[in-house]
Every structure is written in structure tokens, then in C-alpha cells.
Image (tube, rainbow, N blue to C red; front, side, top):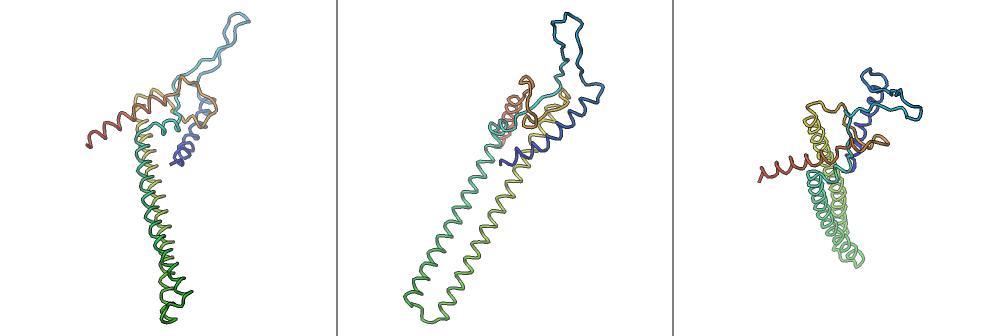
Length: 204
């Protein structure tokens, strides 16, 4: 699930570039305005508060929906690994017994030995394929869950900002500094958790 932060970072990094382009080209953007006062007074900057940002890593850490789906994915991964380990242990035992029979000349014929050797080779290939299939299945499910989570967050932000209070809601990972007064991570996380808890309660 760590790839999710990278995905969101890549998407919102574009928003940062657009923000700066608009900032320097749009007539509606704020400008530095010198104040006609004493020489000791510093020039002031008119600050706009229609921009907010979110720390995605913090949001994911405290978002209950993310924690739940991550736990389910880890549980499924463990189940797959346990099943594969059991089958691998059975194969290793059979392979060891085969080697013991070869060493002790316990086979009735060479054909019998070759037949069992071929069966073991097929089982080994099946284990390799099973490992690859489980890995692919887990990766696809992880990607689907990541997309589901990203859609959940972005759609919620659209609903949250339906009054167009903010022109931009950025990812803090895409810039070096931000006024903490514009950090709405806790607000968004709390609202997402409240909505998720309501949905979970309705399903019970």
C-alpha cells in the first residue's frame, strides 16, 4: 500500500505546478503591496486563504478505512503464504523420500524411478506456477484497493469543497513549506472516519 502515497504525490505534484503558473500570470492573484509608512516598517504581503493542503501519509495512518483494507490484505497474504509453505513442505518431504529410495536402490525398476522423478518435477513446476499466480493475484488486489482508496479520498474532497471555498487542496509532500494554518489533514481525516463508521454501522 506504500505505492498509494507515490500515486497521490504524482497527481498532486501537477497541481503545484499549475498553482505557481497561475500565481504569476493570473490578475486575480495576490501581489506584494508596499505600505506608505515609516521606513522601519517592512513591506507586507496580501495573503490568500483559498488554498489548503493535506499530509497524505498522516491521513492514511489514521484513516480507519485504509487500516481495515490493509489488515485484510495482509491477512490474505499470510493465508496464501501459509498454504504455499504447506504444499512446499509436502513436496520437500516427497523429494527427500525419493532421494532415499534412489540411494538404497529401493525401486523395482528404472522405469518406476523415472516415473516418480517425472511426477516430482511436475509438482515442482506446479509450485512455481502457484507462487507466481498468488503473487499476481495479490498485486492486482492491492492495486484495486489502492484505486478504491484514492477514489474515496478524491471524491470526498470534491464533496467537501462543493462550496468552492478552496481553489486548491494540495498534498504537502509536493512542496517544501506550508503555513500550518492551511493544514486541513485532521479535519479531513476526522470527517472521513465519521462517514466510514456510519457506513460500517449501517452494514451491521
